Image 1 (cartoon, rainbow, N blue to C red):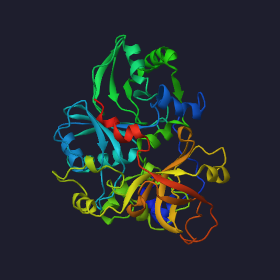
Image 2 (tube, one colour):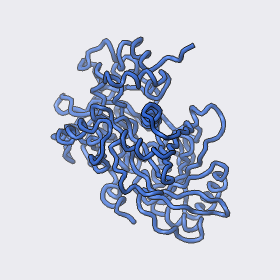
Image 3 (cartoon, rainbow, N blue to C red):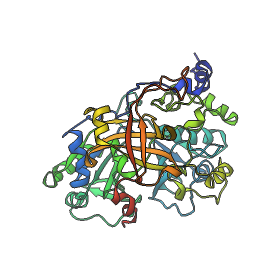
Image 4 (cartoon, one colour):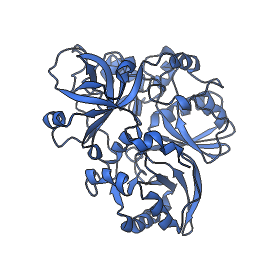
Length: 442
């Protein structure tokens, strides 16, 4: 029996939006890890006031791209600059469709001269694998899915992230002294009691931090060492409810809609992707509804990836992306919800969600939310949104329509009686440390 393709699903549903629109779909949380350890509020405060430990071993898919043509392939399917991409360095991977809109981002680490590790949601990895297999490249792929889709067995790699003002002191205690200086998004080999792995200078919340990753068989010992040393620093383990909310500090919009559902030249790609792939099951939901899937697309410039883009090489979508550079209609912002409206509309139980909700000024649509979280350090709910540039100035007042549009069959602009939540525009990243200093750290 032939496995249905994404294109089969679109054809049967009638349109990409008919396929993907699922009101009231449960928000994503990391698989396997406990939802809470100390309580999600305390866990959020830990990466601001002390030190937090997050287990990132289970929620990302990893694809190794290896071979003589690995660099050429990656260069030809992404907008990144590879000229000075040294071994041991990581970067935000930015692949775009022929129309210049983003496929989705990922984290790309150069492990060796001809070997790369691409991590994140599978959409970018699917894109690279498809073109690598059909373009005559001398390259091999090996993928380890996330723990929800692996089908049993442990991950290939462990990943533990420590971050917060005391992260440096904790790391020094674990390793018997400070690690050698590591620049932001660079890695270095480390060793702990005969176990060798790597340290990535990183921190989702913008605070000082590291990601430690290596062979799964060493993971339990590394975690135990971090927990034991962390006792005197007030270390708090972060669970699956709090971890996604770290995006609010860093200003990272996760999982934009891949721009692959409509272009005629991508019909072969849609026929290649299984219907049950990430691209076929990632839901659309919220008060913002459009029957045109292209209204859900966005460019790398809108997401803040402009400095990752280089036009010094040929790549898919290059001309369209160059044109988009001079016509960036929206910008990324953080919306700070009015606390009284939060209590009246959301109550005390709301934690986290990815609904695409309407952002309005005087009743007119001016933007769309992408992630909304209760954020206890701010004392309210925050939302990452793309907003028309004329309404993106910090301090601007907007309203967020809160509700679930029923989807196809109902007018996108129908008055459905959704409550409006007052909100104020703030920069993204929201955290001052992440916005002004973090990437400048050595």
